[in-house]
Length: 115
Image (cartoon, rainbow, N blue to C red; front, side):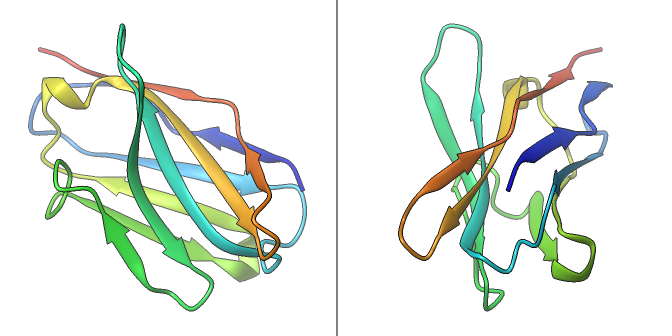
């Protein structure tokens, strides 16, 4: 199952964006799906994930601002990002992890928060 992330762009501080990660097939094979991000000159940082049962976790840096969700019927993962800050600027990557712990990665989508 291939993943494709989209929805990034340029937004002003305080603004919102919704990222989507569309799968080429069913996402029911993924026990966990989530998002990482990588800012310029920094390592990849975990952002949020969601299990097949709907349990979610967020990193402290985005808690209360970002919401992760998945729509199995549409085979799509989402990341709703509100109250964006310049430090949220990064390339965002989605992933799906199978029940055998294999990870599929989508290509990144750039998010830039700037006035």
